[in-house]
Length: 296
Length: 271
Image (cartoon, rainbow over all chains, first blue to last red; front, side, top):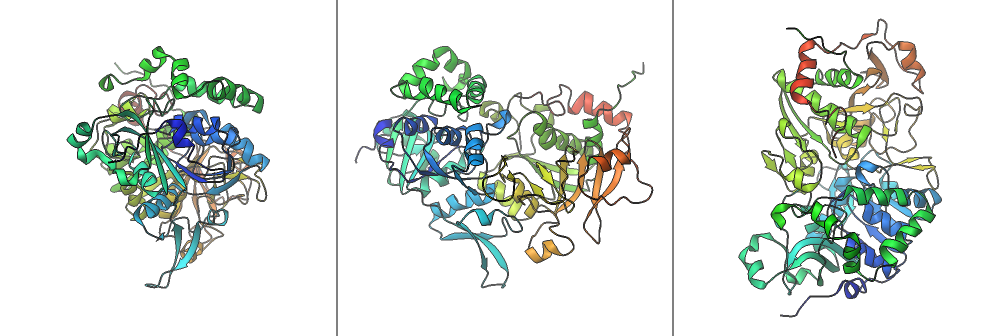
């Protein structure tokens, strides 16, 4: 069996300027932040970002000038408020926003993951959302002659999710399914033409085979796996660690204006060679403080 | 020894007013993604209202994100995953099933808000400004669009300000009664749309014929004129508008002693 193990730099190198790139995670949960930082470091441009409930991941990429289109139901920094880089870009007209509700956003990944052309239901009827998004259209049902909303499948050029473990062949696991919103990442991962998975740990074949029920993506659905411990930081990661609200708060403050955010990028992204250097700078004390005892 | 209770807060009045809207059996979804004032309106007030209704005998299934029927006494200290995962509950659904609950029409009621609402109860949480780049970018449609389409009844919980209560919203992200009678039916919307609007000043409803917003009652200490002044469109005001009933001593004691003893819900003391 072929090894699917890659470095973060190699994996993100698969993304081309102009690609559609889907990012997993939800609000302040399990966004693939190590991967997002590497996208910034490699100065990708004109990306079409796709998410279902986005946050600091989209805001970082928009603030760093990597994106041309943002397609999602929400971009916010949870309790802190609206994502400031995203808001500035929207108000300046420098980014195109394709709106979704949570259901339609999940539908595009669900359809993409399932090989369906679109999913039809009454979602978003009576709203102004479809006019913003070419993926959403009205269809007439051949069965009852009534109008429904069709949400076209998403097949992102590159899908990136952060999961808990994988073997070297690319069999990817979550510690448990159905933890708050983590099932959405399964659809995101399956929908990608190229699928990059960062994981907390690369583990042995035996460790994966001991709990086959927890494999969410088998190796044929995965292009490469990258070991990136704390790869969702400062977001929380299921039962492994919680979020670092102090770090998120500092980010939020730094993003208040473009100059402050440029300093943030210099200090926390461009000034650091890779994710390992980022973790060194965050420091052991801070990482241990958010780590759940059960995960140690 | 009888202890005098401090007067009801506005949030307590809103919670009690909302609690009186529920029927024998309800299923509601409450999202968990916001903080501060938005948290009080989106999570705190609906949760307290549902618990008060449950005290009265309403069979209330509360769904917090993907969690069903969690214990009210176990509300976590933070919404971070490890704390959320410790919240004892009856079911943790896959996220797609949780959203299917909306689409299947199983949600009897839901709670939504926005930056703008108009006289037909349409909500905007996307943008200020109709054309071109937004003057102000807002949070996005999130799940509110889905609540407003599919829930049997929606309850809108908003601050009562003139810039919020506008004649026509700049963007419909969560549909209310559209442009009036028959609109939801013509659009093919399965849910019933907004039923009541509960603000920090008043309880409002929608006229059965015109579907326009009407004033039901003003909260204790608030005048009809103050409500009119804080509303940017012509509100229907029936003769003899009364006062929103004050919470009873038993309701206040339940809120402060059992439902929200540490202010997590009505004071957003949650991380």
